[in-house]
Length: 438
Image (cartoon, rainbow, N blue to C red; front, side):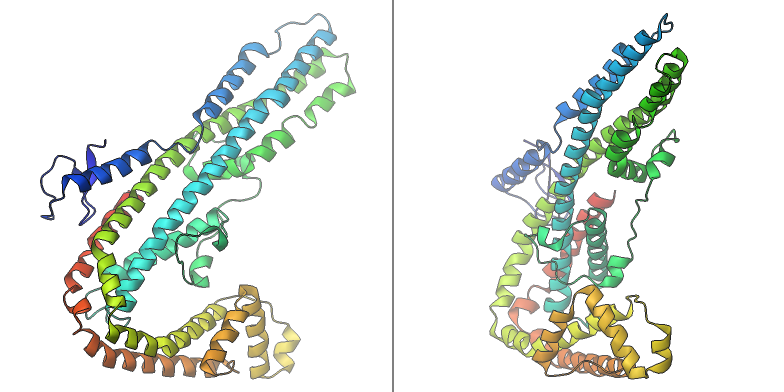
């Protein structure tokens, strides 16, 4: 049982035997035990089999203990035989173990990536409820909700970063409704890995986290592809010459230094993955526990209120309009190639529609766009001016709609009596963000 748990009211760290949290909340013994058991389970979760590390490190040590060439040889056949034993050991023992370990780490990283998506998805969903449903999308300053916007942006950015870095597909994610992530956010995160970086990194004496990530992606090819090919051929050119064997062995030993670097980097990566797994599991437990205790009853109460349901139904056309606007703005930030002569010969409207079609095909959003404009009974904008006019008019209409309806919504019990509790949930999000980023 964990001695350190967290408060189910604010998410702050709390000693199991503490009578009250600093926020003033007092938890029952049963509640403490439930949280403690969940945290203990996360601490005991193993995502990478430690035997893979031990076996690889032992194999690497065996190489240096048992397969180094002698200082003196009388005949070249003995030197060649020892060299071939060394190469065979690398091919049949060390390299497979390194790659098995690497693959296990990659699988574990995918598990942790999905854990991250779960946490960031929850942050986005919670802040979206607070900003859009509970208080309204145009009342951020009025209600002092800027911090929720910051947390929502943080969640979107980190979610996009996780998806790109781990090459995740949205279909991999089953437990959270991610909604639509803007292409501007997706494009803001570049691919940090570069081709051939292993060769440059192997020269370094110190390895950063980004270095480790690059090596992890390339180690299989770097070792299996470059380690032996070409080196063994040196012997074939003069199989009787001890000098040729020595030269080949020297080249091989240079590669062995790279293997040691790889083993060290994989060890660092394994430790980091285990740490990240516990960190995000704990963050998920905090969000889930505090949400169920504080926000879920409010969400359910609001979702069953007739006034709110009537408002939400009336808001649908505005939601569709805003989604159209969002997609069109994403298209404007998407780069496509437009032929010079097309720009010169065709008119403004034709060029706009041509590039618009290329952009929406590139983002794979044509079907959804067509569905939206069909629901709204409108057509694709013919020019950029048409779109900007549509954006301005519909946003102003939406603001007016919200202004009128929020006067009524503020008075319903689900909102009027729960406002302070909803705002206080920012403290839980702050605690989770602090856990993740520190």
